Amino acid sequence: MKRYRNGEIWDFEHEKIAVGGAFIRENSIFNVNKMNHSGRKVILGIDGGTTSTVCVCMPLIPFTQPLPDPLPVLARAVAGCSNHNSVGESAARDTLEQVMADALIKSASTRSAVQAVCLSVAGVDHPTDQDRILNWLREIFPSHVRLFVQNDAVAALASGTMGKLHGCVLIASTGTIAYGFTEDGREARAAGAGPILGDWGSGYGIAAQALTAVIRAHDGRGPQTSLTLGILHKLNLSSPDELIGWTYADPSWARIAALVPVVVSSAEAGDLVANKILHDAVQELSSSVKAVVQRLDLCGEDGKDYFPLVMVGGVLEANKRWDIGNEVMNCISKDFPGVRPIRPKVEHI
Image (cartoon, rainbow, N blue to C red; front, side):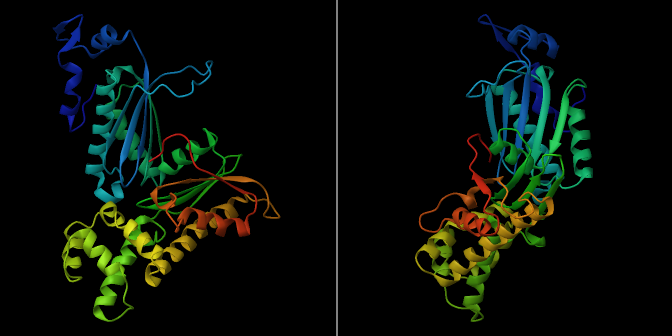
């Protein structure tokens, strides 16, 4: 079994294992697995985003058996960003490899027990992205392991429809994307191109506009806003001038997006600038969903057909008086009265 450049991550497969109160060392991964786990087979599911990455390890359940409720999760591991567009391919792969290893360690399993890996990660935007990740995974896992790689929006949709790929999903977290499927397998997406290319309804987009508004107000190019005091207090800074150094010291998307609650609080307090930023975000998010729905004709000829809209991500979670998710739904339902919002019951980050 080939080991990737971070091969030391997998050294636990060769370390001492406790059996019957004694410690033994086995160089054979298969033998260690057989002794400790009675041949238990597992699958790994990875949900990788720009904010965080989650891997769950579950026992393999034959299709002939009904799925138990709740699902029997053997272990869960969490790591940081795995979007290669945000942190680079090397760092993203390091994160993914570490989170998979952590899940296997916690479940007392090894790679030889893995039967399938399903990796849904932000930044998989083209077949070449899938091919690169698949080739990398083949270097890590034995040849018998089945590998599946998709954009994280696919997993998000399935998390709300219990596996059925039909309808539309809207993710609005650090980044944003709308993704849809028809029942005959056609698919379409909108947004999800990152902050430079205009994901303005995302957490990053909202916070970046707030930072810009503070600088504009400080320069005299824009209206005064309570965002200035709110953001400076949040960051423990004394002057808007210091925002320049703070921003470019580490312009990671998730770090910027963490300022969204300040924008929401300012809007709820009546700040006009903050309210405009959030209203613009609602329009951006709504237009992404509408574009997907229209391209796939999910709403039918009269625009009134039923279709599910799965809504995930921190930006869409209910806030006090300013509920971005609710505002997005109100906007979409005016054009597509058949839309049915779904908040997933199963975990999606």
